[in-house]
Length: 384
Image (tube, rainbow, N blue to C red; front, side, top):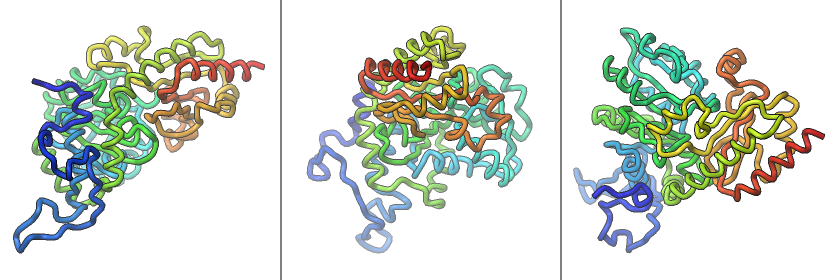
């Protein structure tokens, strides 16, 4: 019998019925750098925490279960996860990527990865013909869906069929929706990436990243790479993620419920020229989301009628915090132009739809009436 995702956020079946760790319900933090050996050629299963650590391993098994992979890797940040993953490729390899990505991903690809000999083609994977971009040296397709920050939605199954046809690795950044709302591996992806800092951790109190794969060969290569590069997640941070994931489902449900109410409110404001939220029926990705996801998530973006109004909103919010990051219990508002996408060239930002009038909101779990009341008050102030 297959267990529900909320149960899997709390329990690993392989540990049930056991009273290891003195029966502790909270998995212990194995804060150790190394492990004693019983004898030459013998091991407890753990040798050195760069290679493996019981707390990190427990977390990896949980995330692997949630995404339905064969192996998962917990890393120090989301960017460390992407960096490690791209060690699979060699100079001359060509990668097709979504054009509207988190700014840190674009910075990595266009500076570090290009310097290391990789070649990139950036497309709007929700509308452009991805297959036309495939070359003889293409090795992978890299997606975010929904994208950060413009909330473009790509059809994962459709792109997975293109990847299979050309023997490419399909990589999907699933940070925005988490395995609670979307499971790319079940839709044909080979690798899933997460910034665990965000919804998986859920409390804005630690940094983490994850890679999950359904491919045994990729898993074996990544296991070698993580011990070689040394970017595995520390024990205490692993424990914080284990704790955060326990409430993933109820947090995602509440935040998504709040998000649709805020999106509908924003549509009523004359200062707002466009709301980008895939849970709105008019969003071009709405039907795809209904097909491939179990919810629409807690992220939304909106444009206002002037840069001055955008800056005024950022200066007037109080309970809603003007801060980078996303996915925590608190609602955050971000200005992509100077924050998440500051290092993206202006012409690229504008081409992707990010203007000085664009604001991104990570909706938290506060009472929705309070969030809407604050936004209403802010809009009334900027109209004065």
